[in-house]
Image 1 (cartoon, rainbow, N blue to C red):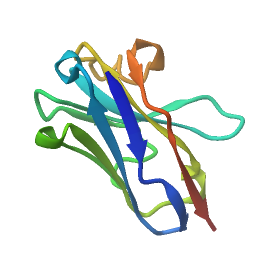
Image 2: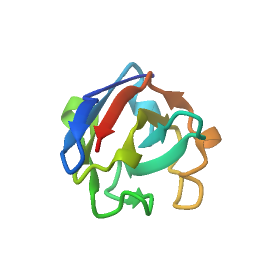
Image 3: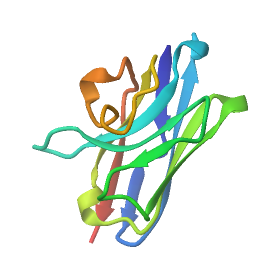
Image 4: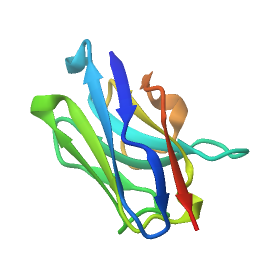
Length: 126
């Protein structure tokens, strides 16, 4: 399974970006896809998660109400619509895939995710 993240860029505070995560290879072997992010000098943190087989969705508190995760099964793509961006959203954003359907407590644990994309940089200026 390969995951390819894209869509990052430089945006002013209050702006929006849409990130994409395209899955290729043995796509049937993943059950859920998530977005994580890592800011300079900080640990990687969970952002949002969605399953391929249902619409169960989880968000980190820091992005709930501003970010929306969605999927297009026909395109094997998961999106992260990021609105009302803040400077503290600046980070490298990674998509991850899991073979099992991780629940709300498990999803934020990055060690439980099986596949990782290469990351896309999001920079929000004040």
